[in-house]
Amino acid sequence: MSSAATGEGAGNTEYGRKAFKRSKSHFADRITADGRDGWPVEPGRYRLVVSRACPWASRALVSRRLLGLEDALSLGVTDPIQDDRSWRFTLDADDRDPVLGIRFLHEAYDKRETDYPGGVSVPAVVDVPSGKLVTNDFQQITLDLATEWRDLHRPGAPDLYPEALRDEIDEVAEGIYRDVNNGVYRAGFATSQEKYEAAYRDVFRRLDQVSERLRDQRYLVGDTLTEADIRLFTTLVRFDAVYHGHFKCNRNKLEQDPVLWGYVRDLYQTPGFGDTVDFDHIKRHYYVVHTGINPTSIVPAGPDLSGWLTPHHREQLGGRPFGDGTPPGPVPAGEEVPAGHRP
Image 1 (cartoon, helix red, strand yellow):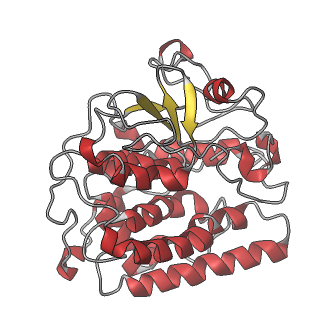
Image 2 (cartoon, one colour):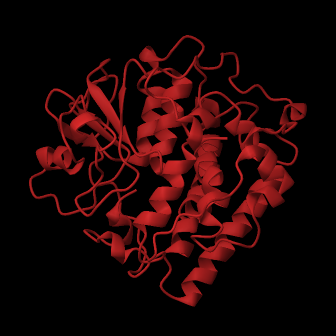
């Protein structure tokens, strides 16, 4: 998530005023087991920088937790309110990331490419020894965590991208990306009624299809959690809090669809999903940063979050969340979402 989403270099006031176009990841190097791009998988070498507000970054947060990579890949969390200089480390002492020693994420981008003109996005993986950005390819990062980082997975880690199901996972995830993950942004940042209504139709057509798919099966592909579920979850968990109102995706709230509401609560209550979600960061980012859409920067007091912890009964459909594996352990000290930011 970056200013690049609404035009490269655009400031916060431009959200909703320029035609929406999601930029491709400019830095697409991969961190692999064989180090073929010059970045070998090594425990402790890299730092994952995220905003808990951002759905694209949240994919990496969930994957890292499920796979047990917390000790191998350290975590930097930015302030949910970025300014025109980029994501800020104002949640840390002295307003600096304690590992990278930088105040703004753009500093890691600048070390990689001088005078880089594009948007500074999260998730970003930074090489700690050099301080250089390695990749901001949000689509590939989680796939590589699931496959290339396998030797560093915790015992009992699930296979989030099983080889036999990859074609189906990719197909399902592509439709969800186009119409839901990206569709809510196309609706929210639309600059004409026609573009807004087209995006709105795409969002709800796809959500209806997904709801039908999940009516009789617990997960999107197969009987275990996969990459496809992670990609859908990070949009659904934000839907009623921000996309329904702020992005005008208001045909209905998620909680009015019994299947999707049950599905997203099932995931939220699964270790590794809900324990990464910070509703305060989510709401403050969208409503404060997007001043082109919400010029008053008033953050809604709702919605009531208590429903997230209510029984979902999805276990009646069967399925094994972690396959032959086990749930992740407790959230590491210092990475917990504050009590006031969750149900």
